[in-house]
Amino acid sequence: MQNLEDWYSSGERINVVPAQKEGSEGFNIFCKVEGKGPWLTFLHGFPTCSWDWAKLIPELRNHYKLLLFDFLGFGDSDKPTRHNYSIFEQADITEVLWQHFNVDETTLVAHDYGDTVALELLSRQEDGQLSTKISRVVMLNGGIYVDYQRPLLIQRLLCKPLLGFLISQVLTQSTFKKRFASIFSKSNPILDSELEQYWQVVSLGGGVKITHRVIRYLSERRKYKTRWENSLENSKTSIRFIWGLEDPVSGRSISEQIKQRIPGADFLELPEVGHYPQLEVPDVVREAISE
Image (cartoon, rainbow, N blue to C red; front, side, top):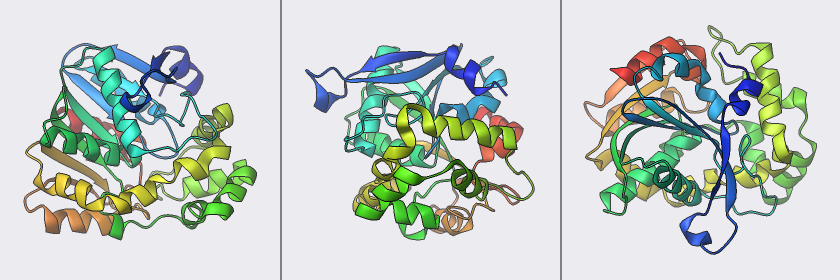
């Protein structure tokens, strides 16, 4: 797995101006493009970054052209402190990046937070509002059925207006590591060296102190659940689900809803895997993407 320093030194920061920000200076978004072949666009989760996909890259870049980037407020992208972060804006940023790199058609590979961005992009495609064609979607663990997700206690507290701000100002490395490690399975625990680098990720550019702002996507999921759940269940685009069942946040409770609401769904269940299948069983995930 490429270490974090090498990951960021091999990419670039691109100035992106979302549609609703036209006329402004926009934001600098960290991006990597590797490989050749059909496009794969990777959408990472909360609270991490594009480095989530590093274990998949060496093989996939031999067969695909890969677009990997950090969402606004994450990783090495800009992290404005007083910004109202939104799933809709992250979808806008994705579209601008597609235009920048001349992506006419792509598969989406999404996880967690990225799942919701993918559903917004699918909604736009169904509405005829997307210039880039999404040919296929691969989704990994995420709270796509908001009534059945189980956020960690610290996530629920971060969503509270004043308390969330206070927690984000005093969140420590040890607390982060303990909570982050808890969403991995016992069979495939995260390495201490990876935990250390993920703390570096969330700390870049003062990112820890805006956690209470970025996590507002949880309330967006509830507010727009009809739009995004309808897109999930009625999309004409092929969707493959790769799901770690030992995920305490969005594991079995979500997988059961997928099977009930989308009969015959293309579903790969991973019984001894937690919230991050791409980190816990990368070979399995890589093969499932390529099939």
